Image 1: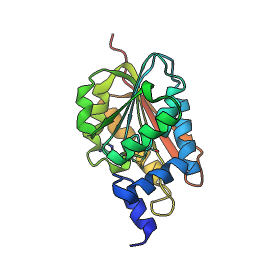
Image 2: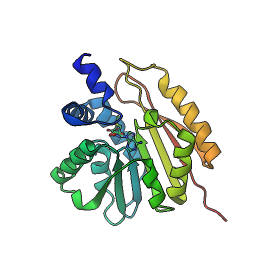
Image 3: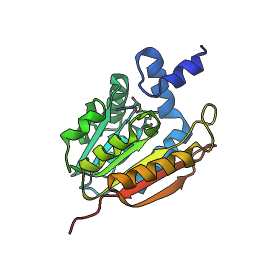
Length: 207
Ligand SMILES: C[S@@+](CC[C@H](N)C(=O)[O-])C[C@H]1O[C@@H](n2cnc3c(N)ncnc32)[C@H](O)[C@@H]1O
């Protein structure tokens, strides 16, 4: 197996030295940085926002969230200790470590935060989630009324279907609606050669 193949295989759960390399690539690749930046912009964060990123990887988006969220809450969740460590270092370097809680674990941890957030997002996580119905039901439960879920996915052109963003957005849209999300829309993100799409849905306020 080539080093490139070995690194790409690590993206779902980076471990050991090759996983560290995968994390450094995620953090430096310009398409990844743009995708993170644009998704954070779409969240329209406020100083008191309560935000959760699932699959935070090396913490690019968390550091951007911390530039705005000063009185709220930011949690980054990841099941890779290597990624949690890289995110911790990134947040320390940007002086925002005290604004973000890094939590090690998988989606089963979402049950610990019922109704706790007004923004829950993920970036290039959804392709690794086998049971997407269960995932969006759990995300729905973590959101407060009026809260928003954002799911960004950008296929890598060298090893995934270039039309994959659209196919994934179709699937995510259907499953989000089934989970109870309303006003589900998709927004294109220009971030490098491969098209990215962010699917956004809201947990409506109960009257
Ligand atoms: C391709 S990386 C993307 C990282 C980051 N969101 C970004 O765009 O820079 C996917 C991340 O999701 C994490 N991940 C994958 N499946 C997960 C799960 N079931 N629970 C928690 N984290 C998961 C991986 O460990 C990895 O850090």
